[in-house]
Length: 86
Image (cartoon, rainbow, N blue to C red; front, side, top):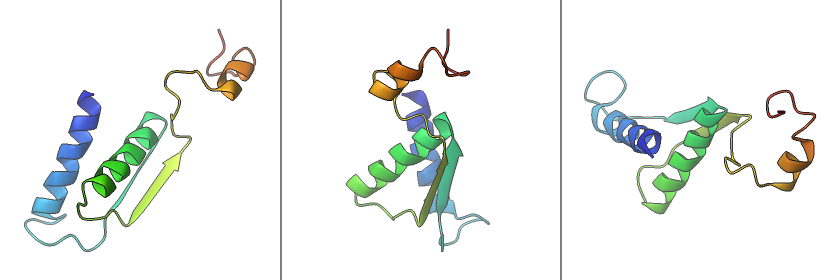
């Protein structure tokens, strides 16, 4: 959970301080790949659910959305996937 709290703190900081010193954030994009994509998605949901300043764009490259590895496609492809295989 530390990474989730860190990304929320970073969001709060940029909203409060702006990208170039204390100023209003005009556009805000977040993104990441793998677990960073997971964090971007979780942040966007947290912002939405908290009725906070909306994120203007979210981009994710192969986000890690099934960290339990319980999804059917993950289990079915485990042996042939170069990243997941044992």
